[in-house]
Length: 319
Length: 319
Image 1 (tube, each protein chain N blue to C red):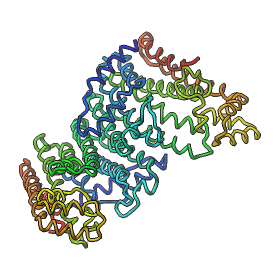
Image 2 (cartoon, chains in turn yellow, brown; image 1 turned 30 degrees about the horizontal axis):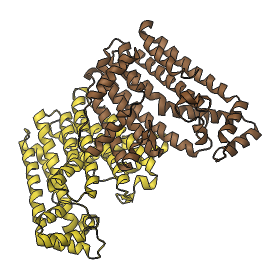
Image 3 (cartoon, helix red, strand yellow; image 1 turned 60 degrees about the horizontal axis):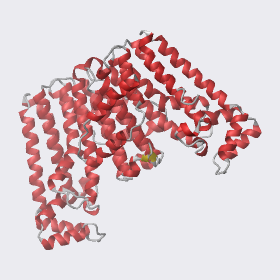
Image 4 (cartoon, rainbow over the protein chains, first blue to last red; image 1 turned 30 degrees about the vertical axis):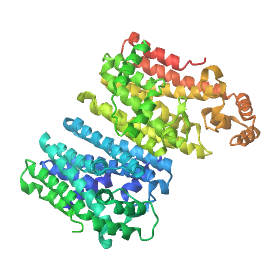
């Protein structure tokens, strides 16, 4: 089922003709798009169009727009985070240089917009409005994420607000755009947006949990990576919130330290403070809100099976 | 005459509400937009709409889009060029930091697109197509400009191609977008684009000339700045093309050197080689093409007076 959407998308990516010149502008774009990735966001565009009875192919240009936009954010985020590796390969600013990465990112933003202008004119403005709102939010989320690194008073609510912008609304926007192109009524397009946003929030919280409690064989990233980099995840913020004075001091001493047993010590504190259960409860709340929104969409349930399946798969990587 | 367009624009900029939060994302945008500048590009949008009988106010959103887009390119170009000063004030990456400048630039691109979506739906796709084509070309031009710094075999044709993309097409695109919103026929919209592109080329060549031969009181930049930074301008490329072997060696020794008499020595070679006349002839060719295109537009001549005036003013800063 999922495979059929991925086939449409892969065909679209293969047929996607970027200019050849100037080579150093477009080569990084090709490089990044060819690194693969799960392509969940563009697949969501196609699935949402299909849900409302539109041909998924009709939404292919929008799916490509979302995938290109997502990769634009990766190129620029990797510069800002000074990340050397993306999907197991050198990042664009490492393989080329920062200036090329800035400019190739910029041109990807233009390319994303070009794909979107292929939308049927009836839906064009609506689709652009969702896209621009989403793109703006993603920029805001990235700025907040950078600011949070330097702050010591980030609240849990602020953290949720940040991951909503940085991660969740792009899932929502992708689905809403697909729904609009598929001919959904406004209320349904809004519900599928809510489904996507809550799914994205649940997904990010799961990621926070798996970073500490995941199976190293399945997680794909280093266990404890967030702890080592002092990332203010839901777990860390909750631990600070739940800690007594002694525990808070212990935690504060560990954060920012190069202590060799740091991951084990922080995890022990998380266990003492029952942090995992808090995170799972929060994740379940968002999952339920996602599934409730999906249920409320005025389409026969059997048409929702594919999205339901995908969501359950995304949220059950480990459990 | 010009003033009335500038008034409309300034009112539009005053009324333009950017979000307040996150402050560090939008503060740099406000800062840069408030630094002023000549605002030629957005004024061209309004003038073009007016030329074809559209209310200039009808094109205000597009004028703002062009101004915001132009400032987006300045923010990112200044990072890439490591420029400390813009319009007499610290650049955004100096006043804040590079990451903020990347991200504020990105969000300006989104803001530009948001302004454009306010275009009447009849014209929306056409306007977006011109805008995206222009934005893509500007990215390509910036990449070529950076590459030319490292190359020693840039031809005059390549240089013209680069300044066309980096500078000229945005004037063309601004005019074409205004024309479309003003209700111009396709042929006229294309002619006004040609007017703008050729005007832009003439303007850039004039800038190359004034860098060496301008009146220091009027030019506003340091005389000889291009020579000191070894910029491959039309003058330098023409000098290399016209030089005999001895002169070429002299010039090659000066380029890249820190010689204290560098500006005078290079200027002396330019004089020997009659480089100024070549540049002025090229500039005149583009001016003529610009004015020919303007003449060919199927609108009464008296309506063209304002644009003709503006163009003549732009191209006669010194003469």
